[in-house]
Length: 375
Image (cartoon, rainbow, N blue to C red):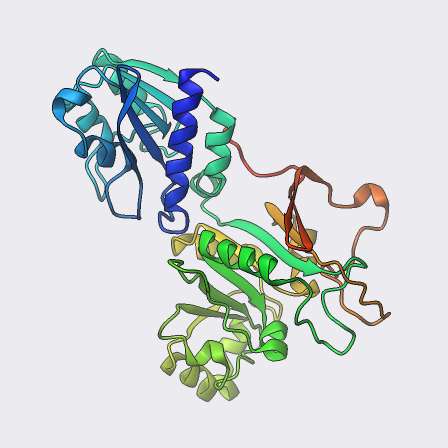
């Protein structure tokens, strides 16, 4: 392993510490090296706070930084936002060389940071562990290019492809370790999306139950405004941001005025999306993007998943597989809808990965053609 790879891998590890908290900004890690020794480290800890480079350089002495090498997973920014440009402090501290994992697709940067450093005489190299650095920020790359959230479909099913028994019981398809992994996903992604059927059947809370985690924004596909006032979601809406997505017809209906007023009084935000009774999912994601929601974890049932896959809106899949056989002709499957008429029309996943959680497994992959990768 080269020195460049060694220090960039360390920067990647640091970047992951910001998972769940940097949205809609990217996760970034930085390592400062002088005379073959790490003299300082930093990462982007939270949206609105210092970027990784500034954190690292503020925590080392000026004499340690002068002439040092800086390894950073994403191109240093060169514009003023909530924080000053990172290129400024790199030049002020007289860094001798900067090694960059991936260039920043943000139009406000997009090579500008690299150009400023090079024009100032700093040695700059790019592309170190580029694929890993881009994959780390697949949400950011997708969101900054499209303005819409990165959509992740997550479901748990038995070995025979069932998500619940025929009578609706679904506790639990998988074990404790797999369910803990799901809460880490809820922390990672900015919002969680379910259909009203899931809410009516399970009365879920849809929060993140991991230490130090952040609750996702809860988004309910509820075309006819059926979200109960006495549900756990409604009763906790002032604590956890909640969007109830309905049709414009339902939102404007006279018979729904009292129900809508009750939901809004409880803290639920009503988001009309689509003129027909069926919600316009593309429009929904465009609206969520405008709200700064860069990613959505879908934990809905087969109907919602079927609609998303048929529309080609899914960027990533987490399929948890429990070691159980449920059986039953009427038992629900994770993806419904019309389905593929021929095997050649089936959704193909690429870059498959398999992880074990106790007695369960998780298969993760990207539907073709997959997420944007900044190529």
